[in-house]
Image (cartoon, rainbow, N blue to C red; front, side):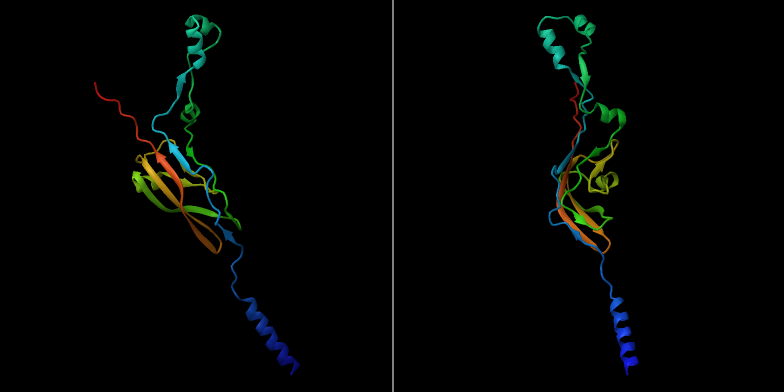
Length: 178
């Protein structure tokens, strides 16, 4: 009798051990970006006028004097290093996502807010492992405003964070023909 009871207990414990449990956890209820948009500029500011140059010229100094002092008329603009290194356009990492690693991010849905083309966006944009959205320096994304929803997943869990990031791809400035 004791052997039968021990055998039944072993079988019951063995079957209970076979129950599939999902490891880890994933919490996205507070997911978001501190800076929730990215502007991809069409016209880069590679060089800009040096305000110090203009100031000294207004004081009556000559360009030759300023050059002799090492003051240049033009300085490196905001996009100088982006253009010379072909650095991609990069947003900020997502915040408020907790869970068991590894956590994967992918595009769930791209909505057009204004103009644009979803396929051109998806053919160029990527999501890094920390939720950072990236557009390559040399891209062919159609200008427009794109609203991004992300799928966040890990082993056993998948959650959607809707309308969490905006990518604005600027239209190039077209000079009027003379």
